[in-house]
Amino acid sequence: MRSVLEYKGYHARIEFDSEELLLRGRIEGIKDFVNFESSDIHTIEEEFHSAVDEYLEFCKEIGKEPDKEYKGTFNIRISPELHKRLAIVAIKNGDTLNATVEKAIAQYVMS
Image (cartoon, rainbow, N blue to C red; front, side, top):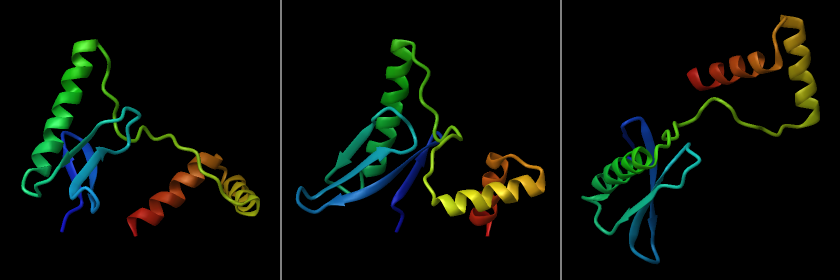
């Protein structure tokens, strides 16, 4: 079963609302809030496509550049001890803290 849909470079996770008996989703990874829903499992993907298309058309109408998913910047909170150890690894390798974090995340998600 797929719970994540993709269309035109946008992604949405589908969740089931058991109280309302609805499938709901929203475009992930953008600042703008774009959501959709359906009571029919056979039309939820169509509703997602419509939401993306309407969002892109709305942005065009108002002259706004549509948000792109995951621009590559995010804040994280880690323990001071881990922060220190990470910074020391970066210094020893002659890298920046950001480069070291990117390498560690790449290694984690690629394995």
